Image 1 (cartoon, rainbow, N blue to C red):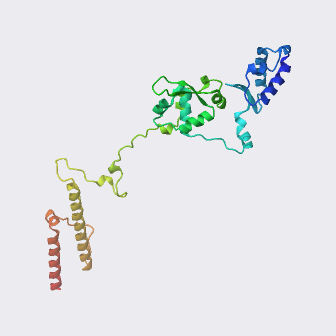
Image 2: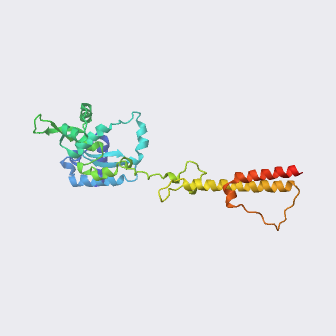
Length: 286
């Protein structure tokens, strides 16, 4: 039989079957008079896979055989044909299934030891009802715990041909959420001097501790005393100038302004009393 005659027969058989078909099962469709060899069936399957390029379906080989299936890029639209939402599995179920797939055969106590929690009986029951796992033997230890392994249905569901197509564990670690492994660095210590309580306050006016162990605010107090002294001297000069203007005397620009001596600066109250006595004398003479 020619390949062109063989291709539509194999294509129709795959579309009519509810399950994937192996090359041996496809060979059983022909008798000896058809003169169809396994090499011709393999060639026909390869040509059918090439014919699906650019179409919405593809010919895929899984663990149970060959099957036509919807391509992944058009699946979101095709899934709207079924009103039933796909099943959502818990994280505990997927972790248990992953341990069985990567470490099979494995017992239930071993799974619990790795996960650190007790495996629910409903999880094992669900996986067995899905025909994703099965009992492949029993461990030769006290209690004879059952050994679990995956099935062909598990490979077919996850679109795998064999367990060798499972992604390596290194790739699975790279797929983890990076925020789960993110370690925040401690924040640097905040310096109070850089952030004063009063935003209008000049940080350069802050008092520094004296080198000789004196009071830290001595320099600030001395500066305040000097400012007070200068203010009092200016007020005294202003009062004297106002008093002279009141008696009609005019100041000559060439006259020198009398400076304040150290004794007057030290005792400004005495100056005020002397000025008051002089003013009383002048009023008495008038």
